[in-house]
Image (cartoon, rainbow, N blue to C red):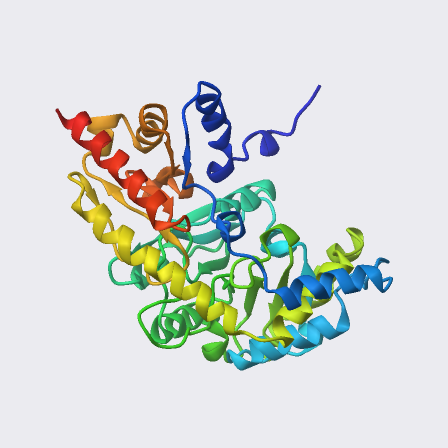
Length: 398
């Protein structure tokens, strides 16, 4: 039977590689899973008051269809959070979604048609390219400097064509941990504004930043530009399996009136998001926030172990991530020594039982020759994995 070529061409490297790991595991090999950025799987849990809010919502009968755009109180709380980060936004500018993935799908579905182009940061989170291709568009990568956490502005402007409809940012970045400063964000806003492009900024890791200073959100420099923020509760608020996200439009931009009117139609078509979990998300915004600082402190401790350790391994180099919980090491002469980054990752899995993700899964142009590591496990697990990686690199060079 017929299968859409667009669907058949969808890839999601982070999860696609798990099937290979299961095959290795069935042979009795113990696997170090460093591929999925899920803090909850590594022992971090939402706080008690948030879990209790979920239980209370179920027990109190909050089990019906919620408004398609989201629980009004939650939309108000989200608007308050994004306003505190600088965005001009009201509850009417917010749509609650089933995670950031659905938020991204709704936005891309609302703006991309056959032949359109969307600029993505190289490297980028894989669903960005998949959703663009599913709508008949073409993803176009632009260059970032991983060492300096900056964007090549000239490269972006050189890649804008009459077919370009949007620029996407992910800050902090997945997979590299790059965090853009206020000046870089302001320049991106200027470019989008001048070229009349949507600027879509994914800030799901907004408060998972290191090395001092407050997180700079794009909302603080958005002005009247057509800025759309994607965010949610999976990472900072430790609610990955609960699938709570949102879209927030820049309320000061009249150019967003069309999408602000039409995107909620997609929310109505899929009916609603889970109401009890919306109550939990509301509590996560209204309740104590001290657990976030403790979580970030633990993540930073792991980062401060793994990056120097990676850079000690012959043939491996890695820029210091400034946010999120990913490292994106580069493999020296990867194509010549291993036949490419995917072969590198598969060989590391087969021979040492360490599961990472090939860099080309995050974009061929700027991801090739790299691999992504999630550094959420306890340090003893990371120590073991790094020893296996070093042994693999040493034995491969002999």
